[in-house]
Length: 241
Ligand code: ZN
Picture 1 (tube, rainbow, N blue to C red):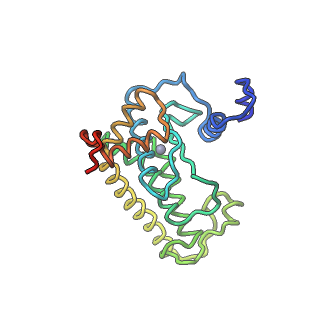
Picture 2: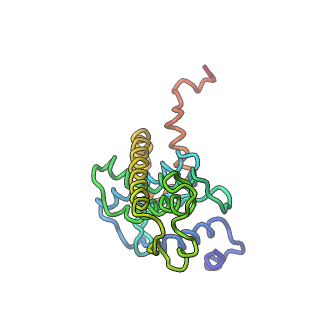
Picture 3: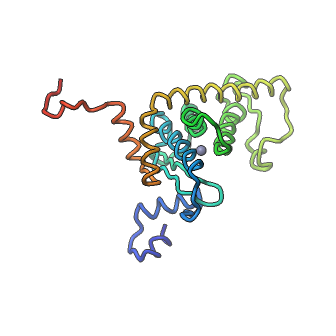
């Protein structure tokens, strides 16, 4: 952020430089020159809107800072920047599930609004799967293994990944697998229903993303609010009935 401020010959580092610095770190440099074709642009706009709406209507989820369909870095075609409202070091179970929902929002939006799915959700699905896996195997948050830890954290950091020697039964492994698969399925269904309910918000967001390429989190919250509490035309003359 300090470097960015310096380049602009600013005397102080402001929020704008911090946000840009975080975005560069997360998603890479903006690639304004890389144009998306119409088909990809549509997919990315719906996909990112899906992430953003789910994040905003899920109470435990991290709130949206920005939604963008400007390609960044090597792989990101668009992205939704979510930030927690304050620094935190612990995650509760509900917050992990909220994160899974938010991650599934992209793929779900593609299916609900475009009717076809793309490869764009690959990384989201990997992260959602990892969160559920950790809940079962490391944090003792499910009934599948109870408080039994199936994946030692020490192994995780040494080996990087889950491919360690197992000291639990095949049967338990199968239960873990079906828990992860079923939970993903169940959350995905929930997320699709939520998106259907908020489809006017999604359509409006996609429209604005086409126009401006970037929407601030504040605008997303505004659209949701307008949808949830539509202002009636004749409310303006102070009639609060
Ligand atoms: Zn995504």
